[in-house]
Figure 1: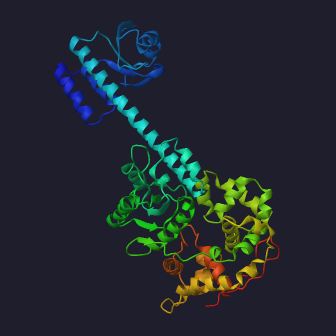
Figure 2 (figure 1 turned 30 degrees about the vertical axis):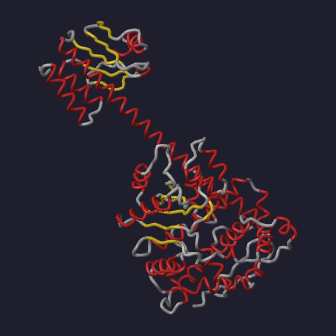
Figure 3 (figure 1 turned 120 degrees about the vertical axis):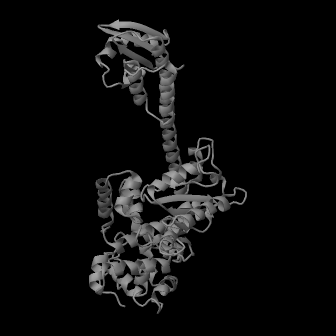
Length: 506
């Protein structure tokens, strides 16, 4: 035992607390100064921390005393257990109160007893601070879950449900008429830091949201209100742009303005823009607005085909349909993370859908056809006309003037003489079912060269090809329409068009 005055011992305890020492460290110091074994007993009579030599069996012998202290009937007590002099003292004003126990061969001196009381108060404060930190982390986790739920409702186009989820404390973004989605690429650790830094008192981010993407750990999804009175566009948008300028590893893709109920479409645009941003010196790109095939096909005829194609899915459970919608856009591993499912469960849903539609979701051309049907079915149709529309073959839709014009315009950047190899590489990549190694072998190139060509194509087409692959389907359709890939016509509306695997015409 080191002999120090009460004041010197208290000073050392305070220095330890200023260094953010733990309750266990305070107990060890207290044990050295008093010569006693010390324990901190929390709720339920459990020993939360103790010196190395504290006899654990002693806690059981003190149960009655501890109960009388924790419920407020006593503030302190002294007793003898065997050869040990035991002193108990309670702290805090909220029941059940924690108890500090000292046990030694002799009773505490006056200075030692005073030091024990001071140390107990400090341990109580440290414990409360730790509980507050845990509570804060719990609050942040729940707030993050609510923000994700709000974003999920917006992605489904249900603004009313998003507002209900906020339980009356509606964030400003849900009052916006139009939003842009900013998709920030950063490190996973920075996602946590950024969401905390810009968090407001209600758990949101003012006129915007910052939501962790569950599928891609480097993505932070940030829908931002465009309404001038909300100030989101200028405040939040500039903050994100500044972060990109100041952090070389960051990149930002920005959508066009969309109605709040069309957040999903804005997210898709931001995803494509991010693919361009990551391949540009500025690491910043806004979506340039090249339309997808779904927007140029004759509406009612295309919808009739889509309904006929998807009709077999009416026989499978809704969770299977939900999984299939995501599989058309994201890799299976990402879908599993997004829905908090195992890969085995996702695979089972895919097999069920494949059996119903008589397709193979492992084929990129099949997924492209499925994605086209799902995208068409998501449009707002004139139901009265659509229900009476005769469903045409897919080949007929793709041979029409709108589709041909779209495809030629879409592929024009790849046919530019300044990029003589990109068109052949992209076509061969699709023909190889997006397998870069097979593409490289077919073209006599290295795998790295193939990926470099694909990154260049992302920039020219303003489509994401390598992160989620959500931009691949437009390329599949454009190549087919222009004749770069020959295809057999669809056999039945319930079956996918079986595309041929002939070589790409370069």
